[in-house]
Structures are given as C-alpha cells and as structure tokens.
Image (cartoon, rainbow, N blue to C red; front, side, top):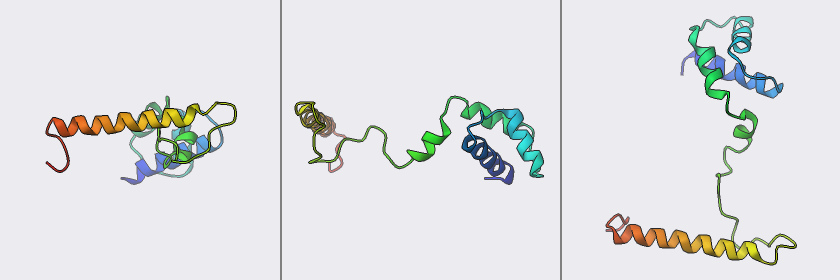
Length: 111
C-alpha cells in the first residue's frame, strides 16, 4: 500500500470518527492540510468506495462474523417460548445436510 493510499484511509477514518460524510473534497482537504503528495484520483476513489458503507459499524464488527450462529447452550431470550433453540437446531441440521450433499457429489474433504 502506498503512502497516498494509507493517507486516504486515515483521512476517511478521521471523517468517520467526527461523523462527517466522506467526500472527495473533504478527503482532499485533509490530505493537503497534512502535506501528503497524492494522485488526484485517490480521494474520489475512496469516497466512491465508502459512500454506501457505514465505516464505524464496519470497524466495530470486523471480527464478529456476520450471520454467525448463537453459541451452543446460550439461554433463550425471555418470552420467545424456546423458539431460538429450535431455530438453532434447524440451522445445524441444514448445515449437516449441505455437508452431506457435498460429500455425495464428490466434493468432500476426505474423498
């Protein structure tokens, strides 16, 4: 990663931390204030890439594993009548079936 790319990343993080919209103009302003030499396309590229992204949630959820199943033995939420454990069992059953299908088709790990 080049210094100009890294500077764009830091500038985007600064804007996100201040709850400011990440735009090409604002990235350029920060980069110029920092005295960074950069190609003029970098701020626009970063702004375009981050316009549909919530950068704060992306950073805070980096290791959470989107769509991860609840931990085994986790207590059910109050008032759901035990629906969560049943849903977890169904999900586990679906995963097992998918693995078996892979084995049947010759895509198994130990074929």
